[in-house]
Image (cartoon, rainbow, N blue to C red; front, side, top):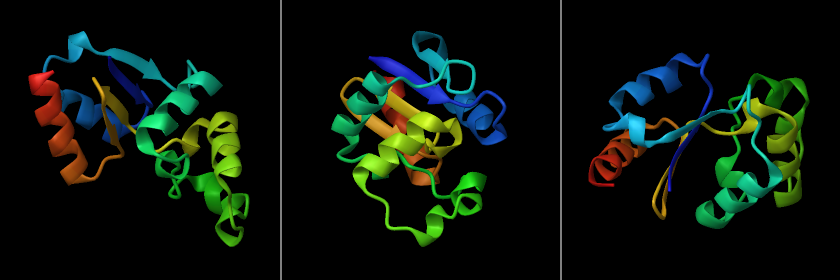
Length: 118
């Protein structure tokens, strides 16, 4: 599977998408206009090992909702990712059986290398 979950209005996502070799082979899903489904987030969790790995703590609503003062469970992470698209750390890139989450330079470099091979 070659798939990228991203936010089309996010300049960081736009920059990273430009780095992806053979981008046309990937299925792109803008999580704002085409929300992630429970089945999709559960599949990503299987690959990532936890919902927490998929959760973005830099989302503006993280502090606004007071989540930074709470102890969140895996169930909570899943619920918030499904309720509010900004809680999905992005981009999330699936290259075969490999999963790349977020925009850290090391993650992007590894993703670009995997995409070039895949």
